[in-house]
Amino acid sequence: MAAENFIRDLSNYLTTGELSDLILSFGEKSWQIHKALACSHSKWFQKAFTGDFDENTSKAIALHDDPEFANAIDCMVSYFYRAGYDASKYDVSESLLHAQVAIIADKYDCASLYKLAQISFASTVNAVESGDWVTIAGLIYHYTIESPAHEELRWLVISSVANRPNLLESILGMESTVELLRSNADLATDILLNGVHKRKTEDNTRYIFFCDGCRYAHAGSRDCSRLVPDSRYGDGMGVCPRCGTGSGKISKRHVHKVGLVETSPCVCDGIETEL
Image (cartoon, rainbow, N blue to C red):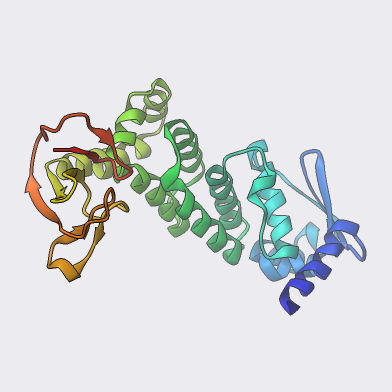
């Protein structure tokens, strides 16, 4: 409760602009903020206001990032006062916003904000669909180069499709993806090395789950959230997600095509049916 009250009281200074000693502007938007708070979170601001720069004595500073980072700048300012930002208030997908914030946080050397955005991005990017993924990948690979933070963001966006072969196939079939890959050799290379290669390797190995009770069958990842291993019934046994029987076998088989009928896609990019 004390921490919540502290953040609430502190955020009032952003809302009112009371005792502000700096006007921060980006495009047509501006914020009345406090240098001490900005410097406490960002080494970039700290250097600007303590080094031999014009900003040291100025009461106004303008940021000149690309327009698509307007929401991310607003999130950074919000973080200075609220120790977080509300992704739901912006008219973009959460995963895209988190990626934008992570890039801005890295640029302005705001380590704690970067960590928050990176964790949020990692928790949402695995659920994005093909159209959003192309937009996010295009952003990350356009604005990142070779810093550790950049490599981390690139790895997250690539691994999000490397583990979802059906989504990867859909993405590679989109015209916008072709244009993106032609314009960004790094992205094309990373997908080739980490996406398509992994997909070919894993397609030949699936775990087959078969329920002795209702004859439900699942061919896909052993770690699928629908399959619950249960050692009470012996090693390699699991609980059937359909009938709850704890006698299903989870065995590893090498298959190129599973001859099951009336299949339906599973969340792990495998299939489920009835034998």
